[in-house]
Length: 319
Ligand code: UT7
Image 1 (tube, protein in one colour):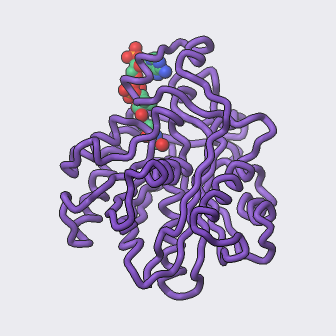
Image 2: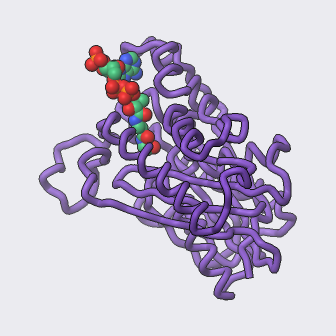
């Protein structure tokens, strides 16, 4: 039994903030941002638009693409670092918006790797026969946790949502997932807000990041996990049709592609349009690649992501 991608969907808020817009409020410029990251613009949610609102739009598109109705969904996994609020959980808010009361639903916090972690959990539930149809969503309102005066972080992030409906199938779908974490590096990328760490209680609710440190670790970790994934599945680099990476930095992505010997025309690169949307970035790229016809049924996809805490993962999928 495999977990097969039955449908994908995504959503980006209509408001676009360009690099030139940001250059009016912090000391930066379009050329620096493009050269160092590959980002041209980001989409920013309206003040009254929540993470679960964006997730609901992406989820409805994925459900429609799968040709099912919301009531067919047996489990909701919602990956996010920026849920609407602590309680109700974002997954239960989404359940309500999809009007599917009773469906089990939980939130998953694994930063930018949250969607890959979600795929991994969904895959286990489907393979062992517990559920046949699972909705995995990655959605973020990163603009709500960004210090818009910090040029080191504010140029990097955006808002959005992506979703995938997975269904049980006899034919191959998800071939393997790998998830990893190394909690020793928590100080290199963090958001101090919480309840019990009084030592950071005075720090504002912003993403704090040592960019270079994260960059170095991510390049190594993503290259390693990509190679391990191929090795453990007895897959040759040439067999990969598409690398669908976390959209954080074009230089990190090209380093992973280079390590795999993949040319950039085998990489789904969407970050120029939406910047780093954390847990939403891989499903956003996946949905775009599928909808614009590049990713075809039968193609072999390698998904990977790395995020704060540090957490990372990969998924090898026969689409
Ligand atoms: O998704 C979660 C994981 N996060 C990531 O993957 C992010 C990983 N890190 C990165 O993508 C890169 O480290 C950044 C894009 C954040 C930064 O790029 P960098 O090449 O590592 O730049 P840097 O931090 O070494 O800064 C180089 C220079 C500095 O100036 P000095 O000290 O050389 O005079 C910075 O102050 O660029 C300056 N700088 C900027 N200049 C213009 C930093 N941010 C900006 C900016 N505009 N926005």
